[in-house]
Image 1 (cartoon, rainbow, N blue to C red):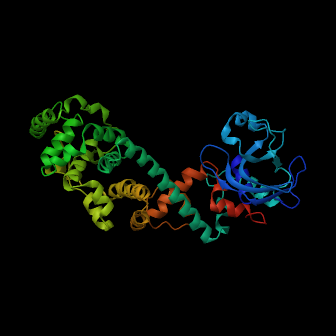
Image 2: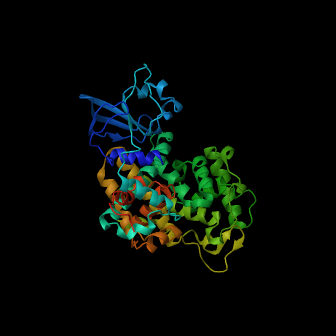
Length: 429
């Protein structure tokens, strides 16, 4: 038994409410269950109840046992003074507010609809990561689509929250935030932290002053990243000379990174941080304003084209300073471009939409996902095996979030599919 399940039971009134009474025998009529609270404080707010013929408006707190009220020290917290009903699976004794007044308690153990409880236990018995797997084909398409819509919205909110933290740290500077967010994503998983660190020690304003020269942009990036300390050939020597001049001009020496901060292990040469940095240099030098380009460009194909960068001639033939490729390469791959679009442009549009209350920008974020190819990995394969057709980035992003955020955590009651299965009168499957 979990509190999440009890939240579901209360919110959707999956119990016998005829003759509903508190543990003390007071008649209860639920006029409004209230709004589920995802933040700190009581579980449901703005509930309306009729208890012993008196109408109450306030909050509802839910626990597995009554004793959890004192265990969580709610009696000492003024945020819980307005709780009008304590809903528990099992009553283990009365609870009091901070002022010593008793709170009415409703016990659910013997009144939850039997089919709901049975279906819930059947789901939990399944050893699969996706608990509803045996019953998934019984769920209507509309419910499946609702699951994906909800999961994608949650994913964008989560990413937006992370972006807002960075935006506030940057004193509400969108250009700086976009640059740092883009840098982190250019590092992908292996070098995300190193790329972000570089964006902190190499301000975008300095790079923009020299964007007309790819050579100077590379000198600033490779020098500040710590790759020019021991030049290996004439090109790296030339970059070092230019970097020393620019670093002295802008006072960059004291914040310079070291090569050892970058990870080369378990990656192929074309994904080495040196190659990624060269691609990043080309990207920076090819766009006048990153934030305005990503938020104002309406053509998804143009965004993809701009991110499909080809580095300087040197990096078409090298994967590190002084080390040549066997064949010419260096252009960023299609999969990498789409990854950057999803994790940079889509998230930025969603965050900016929220900051200025602009539905248009959020719609464009969704539109981009609908035009990008889906990711293919072990998670999307699981959903395909259940009969879902994954055609776009919208589909794959939603299903990855669904799997990681709900399925692995067994939060079936928060999922439209789980909620639909719990209410079935007959045992699913």
